[in-house]
Length: 223
Image (cartoon, rainbow, N blue to C red; front, side, top):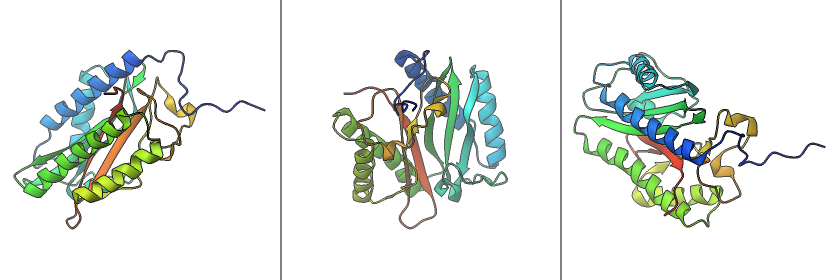
């Protein structure tokens, strides 16, 4: 009988420092991509722009497709089909989700941005970031399981006035390819997540209007 593979297993080339570098590069790429997305652009054009930015930064490859969502599409899950012809309006919201590989290690970063001055869109984008940091602060204590982190996230989202997308539960990363370890979702993990291995994903929805926000980052440093 074969020995089960640990859900936090890594390959022989894994390095925490390399994961930190992949995180830094990925977050920088998201900011660069966002700076070039403007009203009138389609999701497909934004996707092409994103790939050009990543290639220009020296990305080795992608381990998950680039995702850019505009407007109502910000409510979609990562595995739902995009609308390539959807156009970004002059008062609109969008998010970026990228999964590039840098020096053999997997980055994964996502954030939400707003064009125009709609206060509820700005509040939604900021709330996704704020909720991520609140949950990360709980992870810093080293007490909650992955399941516990997402139960905590749900309660906090409700207290803040937003709806948490329960289908978005975070996942593993490591030296490429992490998928061979079949680790499953962070929100289903019964252990306390180790540093440098798990992406905490937060996707929220406005309680009444048809848009949401997304933010994700690597859990790597404890306070």
